[in-house]
Image (cartoon, rainbow, N blue to C red; front, side, top):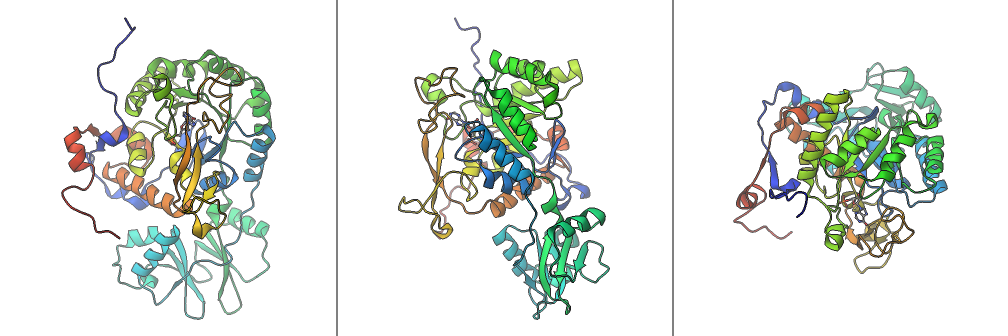
Length: 486
Ligand code: IMP
């Protein structure tokens, strides 16, 4: 007889709904909510990691997600020099001027400008008159705060520009260098810097957020050579090392973590252990010294582990058990270990439910939809294309798929006997920024419903409820109607 048979069915994100069970105070409106997450000292501005998959995370993803405050994790299958090379390039990436910014005219309504913002995924846009004279900055936050109607003029809510405006720095030197801009941002409390000509017309602009340091992670396996990979990545400036094993409740992972933590050359760069899905597995990695623990098995979009060998666990059961281990470990040692959910979270709604327990979420399939994903792009007829206007699909494949040659992560030998992942394609959604910004706003809106100003409060206050299959039908989506075909 098995050691244990669990009769309670394990559940996933979409079976739960978040209750608006805490008072939404004036302090937790969307514009005031912060999504920063502290991952063993790494302060990521948003709680999202892109998966360490060859079809997902390369330089473009690291840069784009990193600029929004998330963390791209470079796959272990990249040759060491390439992985560390991308880290180095991302860490030293120069900020750039926005030479040809999207602009709003003073004659436009807030509605028209908000539409423009949504289309491009920006939250800030310069306002000019018909001669392109710079008048001020429209920011979504300020608009939300001022409570003006959509049909009012954009000028009624913009931060007006005069040469003494506190948030907007300016220069009349068209040859201003990026280095000089960085210095201005460092020395002054400005969020934006505009370059104007002698008539006050907008030439170009720069955003302070673009000079903030990009956070980047690198995956390693437990196999021989991991020390060299770690050393090269640390030398390149990596922020986080992530052990990439499908079953992290494993002596190789435990020993690696102990070795890592006792090596002074690796000090200051946290290590994330994983993946585990049970109380004992999570406790094992925390006791070995993991700074962060990653959870999930067989819920990944391209994953066939459960189909092939019956192993895996549904997300919510894994999250709850591992969270209990984390609580017990905290009580015993006083050390709080952040948990990262990995696999099967593919929308803002999934991220929200996962974040009621986890400190961050890693996603592969979600990020695979975008231009910045590393997988090659295809047009509607299935022909590979570099033309952004024709892109219809993005290649996706699991790290344990035939294409990925199925070694390292999924075996202790060079090749396993069977694959644990598929190869296929996902729908192309365009550039990451606009869709991610929208999804981040959905997450903020959910936190607001739960009366939470930040993710720490959210994990304390969130109340989620399991729905019956019938309730999922009526609460979970539209019903009893037909959609217009667009
Ligand atoms: P997704 O967000 O649902 O696409 O899940 C992404 C996660 O799937 C990754 O971060 C890995 O943990 C996992 N994964 C990646 N490749 C494979 C594979 O080939 N088999 C099983 N799981 C995989």
